[in-house]
Amino acid sequence: MTPRIAVTGASGFCGGAVARTAAARGASVVGLGRRPGPVGEHRFWDAACAEPDLTGVDVVVHCAAAVGDPAPGSRAEAAMRAVNVDGGARLLRAAAGRPVVWVSSASVYDPRPGRERVTEDHPRTGQLNAYGRTKAAGEALALAAGAVVLRPRAVYGPGDTQLLPRLLSRVRAGTLLLPGPDVRLSLTAVENLADACLAAAGWPPGAYNIADAAPYHRDAAVASVLRAHGVRARIRHLPLPVARTAARMAESASRLTTTEPPLSRYAVDQLAHPVVLDLARAHDRGWTPSHTLADYLAALTSRPAPTAARSS
Image (cartoon, rainbow, N blue to C red; front, side, top):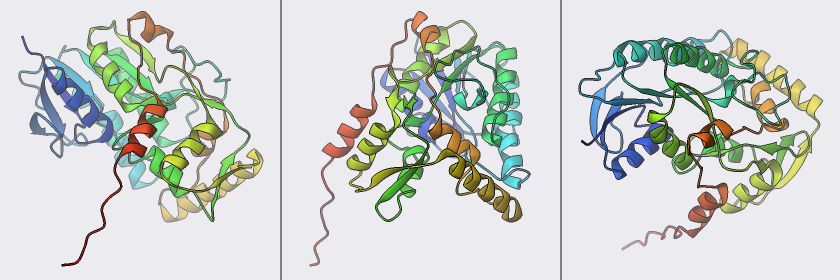
């Protein structure tokens, strides 16, 4: 029988990738969200205030999430909790025993202990922003309900509106400042995440790290991204104490305006410290990531340049 897979957040970056991959493999896709996804049936769902309609669904892949780095105590932080925690609780009630694959984040991990090799047993406290806190609270509900929880880190790929666009926007006067010295970081191709989401429906309940097969050296990865986007910029290292001070000042200012700070302690932490996810638990289930940053950038640079319009 053709499996019927519900994908929440199917109109978004990660959910859309999962929906397209599922459809390409012969599944019947039901997209749940406020807007239609790229394929399949659409059922309207506002995660902030309602339970989804899962009639006839066999498996649920939960990708819907509010993302960003809102100011503490702001309306945006409250809205994030309404989706990432309360919305997740509504989804779990509606799932009523169906298999659930829950896309969480490596942001749930405590930033204080060393993260040169992060297993799924790493402490999950001390998150630096509302996104990390609400993802941790949401996944705790999912784990208690017997779901499979996936923890990707820094998802990139076609359709990305967060990670790489934010990085490119930080270039000023031909220079990109990165906090601290070069470090090794795990990144996750959206294709690898989509593949894991579909494979994980048959995995035992629990948490699994998801990332590309090998970590990247930060500076080399950033330089390759800049080149692929045609951005000529030099990478310079900002002393970590200076970056942290600037982040604290930006966060303090954001509390007055209730807007998202241009720089935060979370952003500094994510770039300044080695964070390498241990993938052994997912490997033990037979999952192997096959896509890399080089694959994505090669596809990006091979696209034909847009043709200039000619006046008649």
